Image: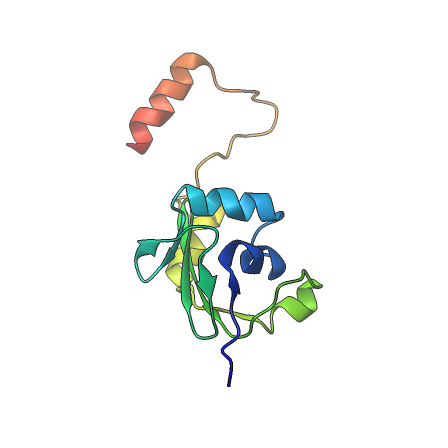
Length: 125
């Protein structure tokens, strides 16, 4: 029995984890896509059961490949090919009430000044 495989950049685009295939390719090149704690190239072949770690600051997402797909499908069908294993505490990092969400600025305040930006950067570090 032949084991079905596909390129990781194509898969990430097909299951709608990235808006475009070029964005998925770029994430692979920057080392933001890991399999087994090792960064992978866009041409890396994946198969069913592989665990994909995707670094999307401020959180790290974990997915399991449940089926192989090469062409982009609707969001309702895409969930059949990927399982989200991301822990709940990672998902809470992007919620504003969690306190770790950065980038919120009250409406009407405009862009931060250079001084405010430096204060924000020093606070976040």
